[in-house]
Length: 218
Image (cartoon, rainbow, N blue to C red; front, side, top):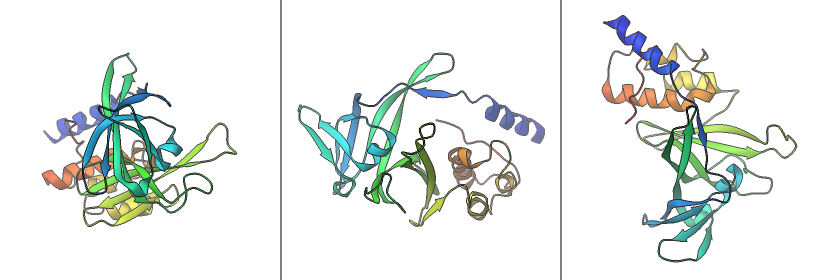
């Protein structure tokens, strides 16, 4: 039985389909803002690039034609719906979320450090945010990124390529099946979103900590 579970886990990890976002800069898409008092307002978001999405959001409230630009200090966050296409041409919708957080540096030179940070894992013991920094001198790789992990006590921890193994080993220390794989193929920094989701799944289900299981997508 254990071998079957392991095989199923490997298959799930091996058949992930690459997704390409069709939503591009300048598109007006269904979205919302969350005001500082917690009120959620529906409308449309004008999508920008990774850096500008973190600095401000252009929003049109539902039922009006007025475009208003908000900065991170003015909102708790915002979100929108984008269209993605898999490698076989199937289209689907997914939610993109940003929340106001304090970064360790600006996303763009002379920009603010209080930003809208892209939220990649929304629920569970750990939440995961991705922070992009524009590199104007590198045409082939115009952005570099780091992660921030927030636990359910509000502790905010930066993860980058230099501290990835040390930080993730500490964060996942009570789940040996995951900790032992850190640094292996499919368990590198770029896979942190799935690792966080799988850890949260284990934290909730409390299955055998020496048995790795992939979080089921809803």
